[in-house]
Length: 143
Image 1 (cartoon, rainbow, N blue to C red):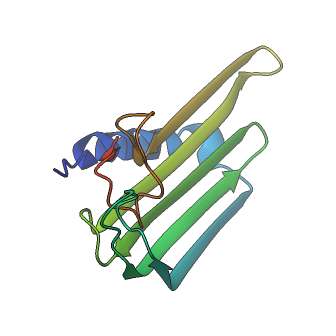
Image 2: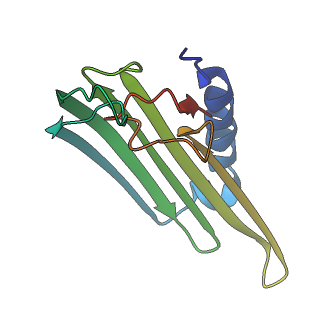
């Protein structure tokens, strides 16, 4: 069963955004925003990664993503977010998010780093997993 963790991710995104507007980061000399849209398909002959009763499937995927990078004299901010929309999967949407804020608060003495990420991970590390986009093993959860 798919359980959304977007409230947690949304909270981290808001926290990252608030920290983005600290004086050092907001005066960053260089900001870069990149957008991307990927479309693809994958054919697999064993979608559930089982020994018996193998099932084949053609899976289509659309992945919009953004990357925001800011760098200043003593601060750096990176934000990458994407959503993978796929067909033929128990979880048709796979969210991924990663943010990094690195500040040098006191020159050569005091540093502050904040890292935040969200995505899908294995429930059981010893069970068959494959790719959460392709293989329907039920061994993934959004975290």
